[in-house]
Length: 196
Image (tube, rainbow, N blue to C red):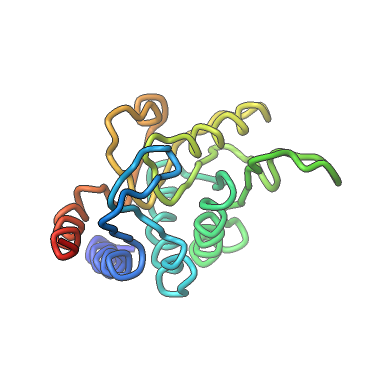
């Protein structure tokens, strides 16, 4: 994808996220990190839409391929599953039968069947993907599960980085995001003002 196509698709995705992926409230909301905020990013509706999922798959695949030459993408259930699925579907369009493979990290080991913590393919270079990173606990959980399988994580690719300063992931693993919180902060501030 050329630079102009990338920018147009990124702008289209940004508008979809503004419309369907940002929740603002006059009451504090508890985030998965445990912190409280008057807004949060909920990309489930963006990823449940074929246009949103396709754009995320195309744009993230570009980063996975360009920056890492990634052969496996995945992360912690639930957030990483639709993202890594969108990436691998897009990879087959670009690379044919040599498309990128997927892995899924379970929060808890199954008590039946194979009892695996990691399902799917771990092939170096391995990239962890996630929708939104605050403190990075979901990403850290996935990286640890990959390490416990005997592999290293080459990088992390996100849809949105909330830009929290006490996040240790960025200093440990090469990390890229399509968007940062600062890309949406003006929009969020305006929405919060409208509530008052």
